[in-house]
Amino acid sequence: MKIGVALKSILEVLSRKRYTAIFILTSFIFFSFGVIPKNIRLLYALIGNITLFDYIKVILLLYYAWFKNNLIHTIIIFITISLLVGITFSLVIFKINAKKKFKGTLPKSGSAGIILGILVPACLPCGIGLLSILGFASALTFLPFKGLEVGLISVVLLSYSLISIGSDIGECKSCQVEIKKNSKRI
Image (tube, rainbow, N blue to C red; front, side, top):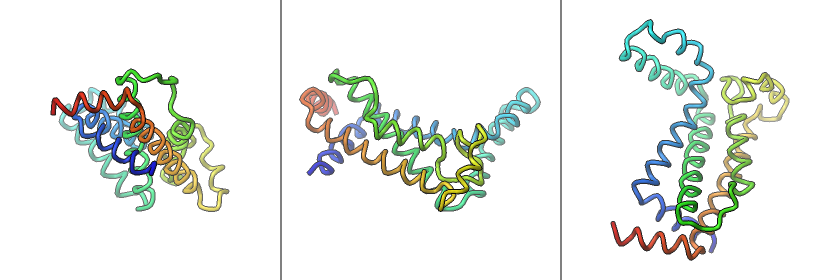
């Protein structure tokens, strides 16, 4: 079963501290794209005008406000997309490090999922995503679920990508050698 092989491979890769760190960092950075860009002017204006401690408090308050001001489905979808992007990125780095012949790009579904997640991560009114920055977000209000469907499509494509990459790692001899080599060190 492809999903079982993929899940086992994903867990094997993420059991390594290096790839767990890559996963967490990538997920956080991607999530931050939903919070920081729409507040960049404020953050820029505060540089040098407040202490570093107060600046960090402002950033933390921006994250708090994001959670407080968004609908639960938006929060769930955007966190899911962020986590899936982090896992996908970790697996891709693992594959590169395993010296497997790599085509240089994510599978098409992974690329499409990441792009859709960046453009409209499921919330139109809160102004997240590059489409809102570019001024195209209002066009998505004409969709039946106001852009929510784009976020869901992103989750589906990223999930498919993870299954594809994970099963590929499970079947790849070079990746298996890397997994077994690292298992002996743990």
